[in-house]
Image (cartoon, rainbow, N blue to C red; front, side):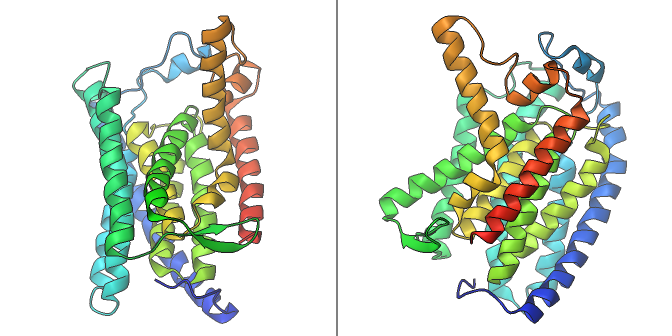
Length: 340
């Protein structure tokens, strides 16, 4: 790990060229896996189940293959294995530090996969019980946090964007804080997944911003997992844009949330997510406001929550929502990169 300052321009360009190669390989692998996997999901009749009280335009999506997050998971595992074989002999420490980042990504995805599998394959409409789901996510979050602090000795330093300084948090505060960041980010991304290409587009931009930050700081392991994730997301997005040929399901949304939070914590910049992930945060707050207001008054603030459905029921097309939310996230990413 290298947190000793920003790297020079020549090193930045050299790293960027290599990361583009990893990104392209990941993209190609994801496209190939998608072409193979989507027909299999369709033949297994692993189809989307739409809510009757949701937007009427969504009813035609009924039966569209879901649980597509396994496409990204397979891609990440394949690229991680490739990088391990490539780097293990020359940069053993760096490649070993890459593994926990892959673990938290795949780990959260696995919890989502179990939920999707129960609902879609075993036809258990309730899926994984919320308590069991949270326990699964908590186990992964605790394991990753303790590994960072106790095994990798990343420390408890946390970057404060406003004052542009690192502060040492007490370990008794840092561990629950890091676990909260992991769980909150994952659930926020999960709530953002509601229309074709929305969650994939937004998280691709967020991961790209975190990857650029990791290149600037010279943190290779984060750069490698970031480039892998960008390629996988772009490959998946080809099949996920409106009209979607496949949905990611909880397998994908929890996986993406784990990747974002894991990268931010490894970079010691979890607070940067307040800027970078503002759209998922707003999506989460809209649900909390809707539920609280409805319980208190019996009325709704929004036509439907999360808030992307409110805009949809207000007449916005899916592509417009994805475009506007993505542009906002891109602007936020530029701001975040400039305040580090």
